[in-house]
Amino acid sequence: MLDSRTVQLAATAWAMVGFAIALPSLARVNADARLLVGVASVVFPTCALLAGVAVVHGRPRAAGVLLLLSAATPTYFVSPVNLVALAAGAALLLARR
Image 1 (cartoon, rainbow, N blue to C red):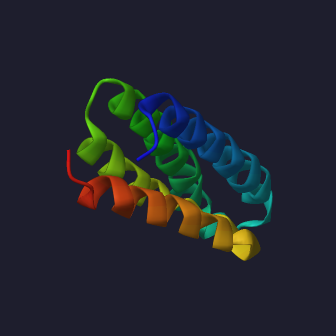
Image 2 (cartoon, rainbow, N blue to C red):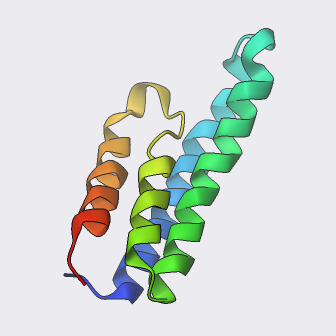
């Protein structure tokens, strides 16, 4: 298993990628969905940041759940990047201590 510092850096990188893809695309969202998509564009990448904090504090299962949630980041046509967060979250959630 990777050490906690590596997972923290990867989760932070995923959060930055999520923010970088989701927030600029917000201008092209329909006006009636802008609030919902805007909240998702902030909340789900923030879950990735919190996953990095959780894993450093010795909470890999909580980090796994947060990474699973972060996979819901609206990345539109770049959605395969969400699969990495999904796989990492599942691995942390299912891993033995």
